[in-house]
Image (cartoon, rainbow, N blue to C red; front, side, top):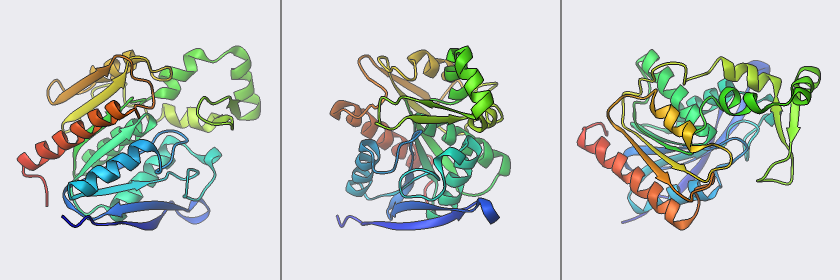
Length: 269
């Protein structure tokens, strides 16, 4: 099989003074397209994204990955980022670079983005059909459910007075910035405040040794999803990255199972 190369491109999200260039890479192929949605402060060159690209190439599947504004190769400032803004980035890339039904693969915050995209797509009843969700260490509503309960009085004052928090990161030498706007916008984008009608199969892979997103959060998410078509895999010693070889094999099998499910449903072009 001739493996189609990835091709770089970009699209403008937003308008006027808010316009920013969003960098993406896409691979032509058959079947539903795998679309990578990275996590907070991650980029499209990470281990899982690279592995998915190779998986798509080896199986002749369409594939797309990108960087949110303020991340990686895209324009804009990270400090200006919000869930709404990053959902808009993702929607712009999908509209420009994906020409077939999509399986969204969302990691950590990317799972929140994926769920908001599904909600928007079902409300609009148009655009690229979303035929599967693969959510890895999903962190929807993390600002309200995972962060706010742990904020100290000093951190709350810092947010109110400075408009942001700068916290040490376990994944970078640079501190992680959490803005007041991120928290406020997060409250306007909550998905775990009622039923989430995805209209497609959902697979969740969650590490039980994840220090950032407790596995109980993934189980709470399941309670908001449809009663059928949801598969959850708990990895006993899995951390937040889920990037070990055996984790990547789990992700690979789950992605191919969703592709097969979409093909059986006749939802590919």
